[in-house]
Image 1 (cartoon, helix red, strand yellow):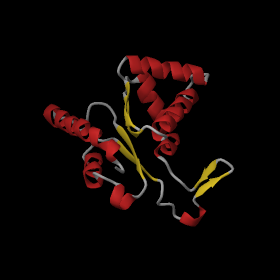
Image 2 (tube, one colour; image 1 turned 90 degrees about the vertical axis):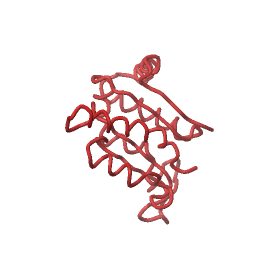
Image 3 (tube, helix red, strand yellow; image 1 turned 30 degrees about the vertical axis):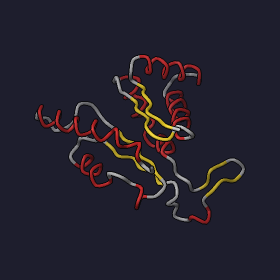
Image 4 (cartoon, helix red, strand yellow; image 1 turned 180 degrees about the vertical axis):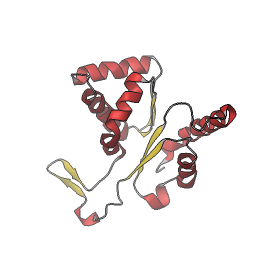
Length: 163
């Protein structure tokens, strides 16, 4: 159903909260960004209150949200000449923090988990990760793809997707 890809992250985030409390530190071990997308904020945004609470207490560094069917001007939303207009998807959010995300992945041992729809979302997120890493200094898309393959072999790029 809508937004169910976030369910696997809830246990992960709650574990981070316990680790933070156990260690008595003000923040969880390393930064954690969650990119969540669904069609509508109201009705589809599972765990809204819980995720906001995890962000407020520092367990989650940043919650990034995209609601693809909640355009401010829904009459103008759609596609024109293969370009999406006023439709926000989760991969569209990477640009705003590409430098930080690249640094976490390339220099700080970060992990990437992709959960949800395998028909389009997973491929679109992968494509945006390639572009993000390429923008961070990997000269070619092939070099970025190789980096993601390496991360996958190390268990640092994992996908839990369904079709």
